[in-house]
Amino acid sequence: MMEDIHIQARNLYKTYYPALSFGQTFKSWFAYSSTPAGQNALSDISLEIPRGAAVGLIGPNGAGKSTLIKIIVGVLRPTSGQIIVANRVPYKDRMRHVADLGVVFGQRTQLWWDLPVIDSFRLLKDIYDLSNNAYVDSLDELVALLKLEPILKKPVRQLSLGQRMRAEFAAALIHRPSLLILDEPTIGLDALAKQAIRGFIKHNLRNRGTTLLLTTHDMQDVEEMTDSLYLIGKGRILSKGTLADLRARFFPDRILDVEFNELPDLNTLPKGLRIDNISGNNVSFSLSKSAVSSKSIIPSLYAQYDIISLRFGYQSAEEVVRTFYEEHEA
Ligand SMILES: Nc1ncnc2c1ncn2[C@@H]1O[C@H](COP(=O)(O)OP(=O)(O)OP(=O)(O)O)[C@@H](O)[C@H]1O
Image (cartoon, rainbow, N blue to C red; front, side, top):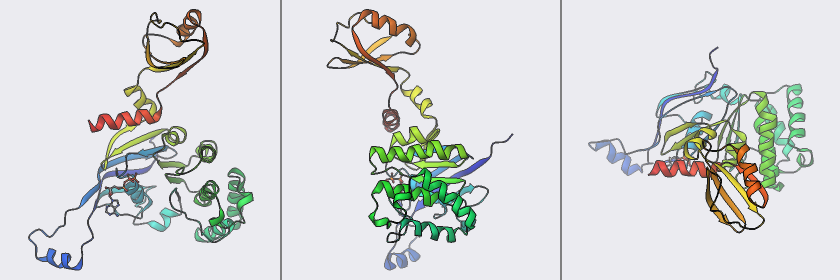
């Protein structure tokens, strides 16, 4: 069976031209070359996102993520190339497009600032032209999942950022869209509020088949909410795949953190272990996957040393992505 592609971009370019003053515009009519130099925010972007996938778009500041999101949302038109979302061209068919789209921008609100939260939801009911039943079903579900009951009657301006973001998610999903776009959804949130958002996405949204597109600088977001990612730099797609692929490419070794009762003489380590870092009685080792199996290494370490705790891990997503961009720059 052919995969159902939800978002497809082919050879997208977006060039921003500087705004010209009247005088500059007038001059440009007579200049030999009348096209002002533009800046390519996107260069030759092609991607395919299957329905139901959860995809992260990551890249440094200015890489072009927001520009790409705006084209997918339909508020920007590409300079050239093709964008199709659910068989529609977003910027041409905006009414039908937004009816099936939810967006959460961490830095902006879509709620009415001075109104109680519930009034924003009622306004959205009218905007999306939802039936009473559809609205009540969806609202009840979102209020329960996002724990909104205590804040429904509060004006948005009185909410903490964590409360407001939960309300933003409800507003983005009240019409049960098939595509949810999140632009830095956890920015500025404390650890608990981040966890509430990530948990909601992982446990409640993913199993419904909603397609998720996420941009973030927070690699924990990527790790917990997405299955694959596109790495963008200077307006181009530099790589795509899973975090596990990327990790295997840059950090094939596993990490073993050991806390010793007393730092021992580590000259006669079991084969395949390499010391990465020593801090007090804690030692981080690299463990080359091909050389040793964790099953055999644990008993030999315990037999040889006085160990308090031992933990296997992987290089953090942050480190993996940082290394990718560093290598790419080099
Ligand atoms: N309206 C605009 N007019 C002119 N240039 C713009 C405009 N919007 C963005 N740009 C430029 O396009 C490039 C890509 O910007 P974009 O905002 O898409 O990047 P980003 O990856 O979202 O960055 P960030 O992580 O900082 O949000 C940048 O060089 C930016 O300066």
